[in-house]
Image (cartoon, rainbow, N blue to C red; front, side, top):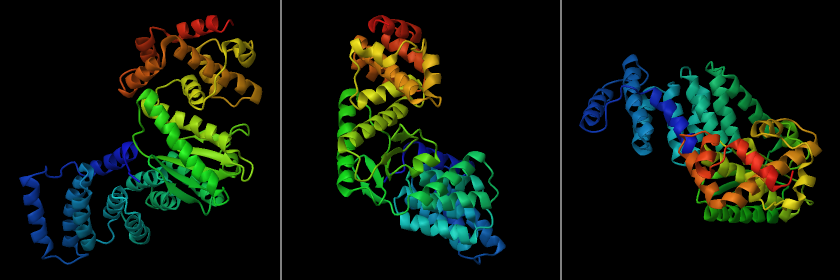
Length: 398
């Protein structure tokens, strides 16, 4: 499992803050390392001078980590740890080294050492470690890292909420097994049937291939997918009972053991994968209605034009802002169904009038990070959001 994209950027940004004055790569750094090694050979571990030398080794080791050279980083950080076993910053950075190198046993070893021995460290780096582990769905390690964040004085309410949620999820999902696929890391509760897990993996890879063939985009990192037996976790995070899927950075799906049909699971997985692609492609700038329309379209749903009035009803949202507000609210099932139908029909209208190529170009423009969704929509389709809605109404005879 690779720690890439936003996870690696967040972790390395945290490390980089600690090493603003590290020598530049090349002769200056090599000279500094030789000088530090010469001094290290003469000091006692744990002594005041030993702690000072450990700090110098950490400074350069962290620079290597920020530059992506985890091998050299782990060498210097291990030397620093040998001189100062209570340095929590060194232990956190060693943990990051091994996580990035996918050596999770070694990473856990250093994280547990921090739990036992750390008396000083910036809590923020343990907050980042918790985020990294949570993104990899290594919940027990995430909890340990976030608990260190709290023990060292961290009080960020966002991280405290993540810690509470991870503890809650661990309580209802013990015994999950995992399946590594080409583009996904799939986790499933113990009572989810093995055949259903394998079918889910095959369907995810097929959906991934279909998306990339049509729109050209790929996810920056492996996608975590979690299959829950029943709705215990969904109830704890207040997912409406009419929804069996959730995307919050991970694809989460509720499965009824022995009752969920493979084709129904396939549709939900395709829908949530659509959200993953949209978020990854747009940097979070796509309108909620576009998110939902695209996700439904990806799972294979279609509404014939003659059926739009019946599906959407007479109280269709009059604007993008109004529809986005509806989709972001807790709605009664009939209102939610009509709002989702409107989002899908709007997306179908966009495809019918401008083609899938325009959608691909719109996503590519958003991925550049320079434009808001409304601007990118106009540049690629020639329509403002208001013109899109009015054209859709005429098209659907509303």
